[in-house]
Length: 42
Image 1: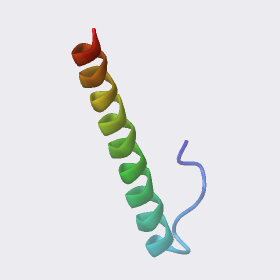
Image 2: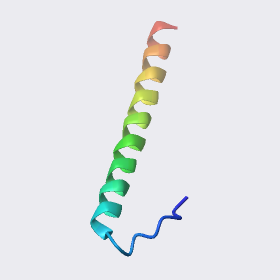
Image 3: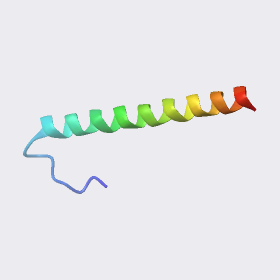
């Protein structure tokens, strides 16, 4: 997964990690809201 050499540009790697964290957080929040809505409508 982390195959690309990041020694040439650590700033880009940090931006990529931050984007991955934001995507993961978005997915987690979406699943959380989906479960809550499903529980409310059930």
